[in-house]
Image: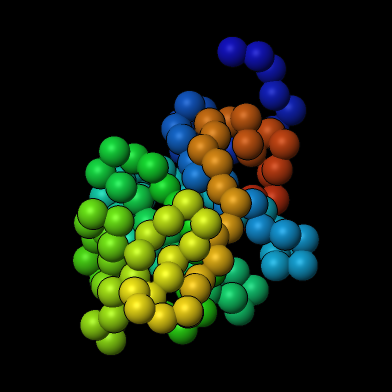
Length: 131
């Protein structure tokens, strides 16, 4: 392993996190989510600076983050679909979540997986979720 200037012991160095790449206007600090948590919680809602997001994680481990606003999703995504708390079905794609039969879309947010030690070394002010 190479030396890093900052370390944090909330996670093991090589534990994976999902780094949510929010724009500067959408966040006050970087956000990372513990990947082991997402594997156990395939639908995870969280807030950053009064905006609501949802992470959908497949059984294979692929996670996608979407702006969700007031929409609450339930269960797990199956066959590229997920249901919200009002019973509407949404199609999951690489670009967005879209209500089936309607034009309503929720935009995907950029995210990537990273090792905790490397991410934290570059962004020690990171908010680690769940907190």
